[in-house]
Amino acid sequence: MTTYTLQHPDKGLISYTDKKRYLWIASVIMPIFPMLGIFCYYQTGSQWALAIPLVFTYLVIPVLDWLFGSDENNPPEEIVPQLEEDRYYRILTYITVPMHFGVLIAIAWFVGTHELTIWSVIAMALTAGSYSGLGINTAHELGHKKPPFERLLAKLVLAVPAYGHFCIEHNRGHHTHVATPGDPASSRMGESIYKFIWREIPGAFKRGWEQEKVRLNRLDKSVWSLDNDILQSFAISAVLQGGLIIAFGWIMLPFLALHNFWAWFQLTSANYIEHYGLKRDKDANGRYERCQPHHSWNANYIFSNIVLFHLERHSDHHANPTRRYQSLRNFEDLPELPNGYYGMYLLAYVPWLWYRVMDKRVLALPHINGDLSRVNIDPDCREAIVAKYGQGELVAA
Amino acid sequence: MAVLECPGCQYRYDEAQGDAHEGYPPGTLFESLPEEFTCPDCGVRYKEEFQKLVSD
Ligand SMILES: [Zn+2]
Image (cartoon, rainbow over all chains, first blue to last red; front, side, top):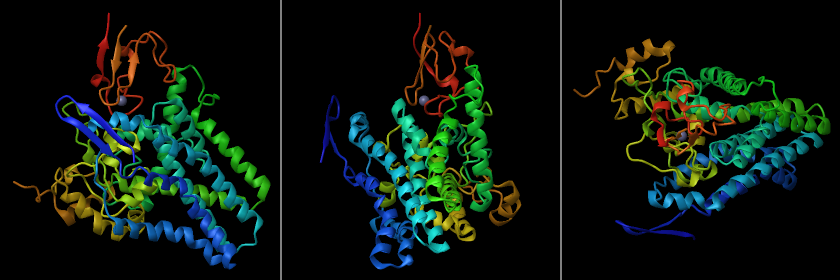
């Protein structure tokens, strides 16, 4: 284990060992799981085996989060510059980029060259899609960083699920407008994920495209210029997915459509749970206050955090978006999710259960304390929510 | 010409250099950037939060 040390003028010797250092390698061996179904199919001859990766992702991971629990360790602030400089961590994110291309091509090959039932094709498309959803997560980690090489890798990996506008929309749009009623990537109390998706997917594309257009216009270029970062990523998608269609035939059309949709839906799911009901206050100038840690739901579950490069330490991420994954911190008194992201996705897919678990958590947050005026509420549900929870009488006098 | 820094992520805007990727040519004064300007790297800090480092 690498130990970082520093001689501090006041605090004396500070040393820190990252207990998760080697666990992060798990994100590099994750492709074993999408491929495991295919391996077991060859072993058993049964197409049921193809469902194994989905069962693992959506049922086993939530159980592992519950079993292994939380890790609330933080690196000391003084050590963070050393931790950020350690290239080991970023190399792991780099390695996952070609793996996302490899896994999609391998699963497409399997689907294109085997006699499969329609259910097996669907299972494979969802499996590939959930792994490409992790590709959007890798792009998220890389796209927030300053070195141009990391931004280039983000653009490349976004081509796999054909979501090239993500980094622009996310960094400029979502991060600036997070936890405000108008943000298509922040969900409102009373809004189900099935309603949210109709704001989230088109809203993200529109805002990303607008941002890129404004930037290119400042450069006196057309939005259709070759310098358009979104079009560059989509061009790679066209080559990749077009090549798969040519190589493996018409079956690739529904397979890739479902794969792309499921990868996007992973992001929709993450966006849905990350800021549900949370709202920034307006300052004296009528502008939204700067994003604080309590404007994002946080989770410290060790297993899913390892899979997702600490994405669940979302409170610190939004307060300090350029911080690398290994240095993201937990804070006291954050809005806490009761399970990791995969467990919370399942909950979100059953809206009445989601409201039951989450609405009271929103209202119990210290900065809200029952005051509905401080909650981001779906206007269509406002009346019902006021009728149910009152107009702030829970506020401590 | 001044250099201004984001207090959150240390992005630096150097008026002498502008920011080619963002479409601000060399010599563009910080003052003349759009009012809704937010830090291009972190997206968290508003224009008036930027701190002047050096000027002459
Ligand atoms: Zn910044």
